[in-house]
Image (cartoon, rainbow, N blue to C red; front, side, top):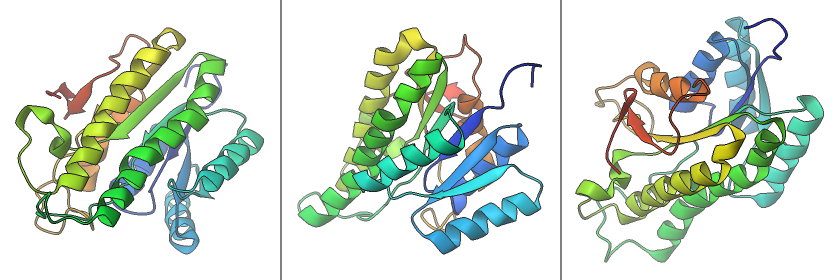
Length: 237
């Protein structure tokens, strides 16, 4: 870290396991101070403790991205405890309608999926991007999916696909609105990953999935914004 520059602070949602947990590990390994968040206090504390035992600078805070009061409490905690936020990784997501037809998925499932996968990142951006604007620096990474690509979208799994397409649109909108403030906002497709969501047959490890997230989270000032990436390469929307 260059002398005189304060340690970067990163926050990762849905980070007690899987891609989020590995993202915390890699960000901390890159020298950032990391705020690991989770809905479940016991799981979140265990995850943060594990990373601290590895020598990583990781704190835990509770967060339910679907609860506006929880988001506000986290914002207050970050202001009190850290005074800034440099990196936001919107990782928390649900996958509730695998292979279900758009004509059969129930309204409650669609709403629950959108609440976590779209409205959650929207609430987090509204809460934390202003902190980045105030300091003239920020990096936002929205963990999306190839399922949200309009370019080759097919039927089935409508709730999840619509939520990720909406997240991609949010990425473009926020990126354009904050461009003058040196805030880079990008979406990433981590691929099919061996997690609780992806299952044991997935070909990619969480370590592989997190690498592009961390790359986007630590972009230089001349780095890209408003893009969709996989393995550090731009992909179609």
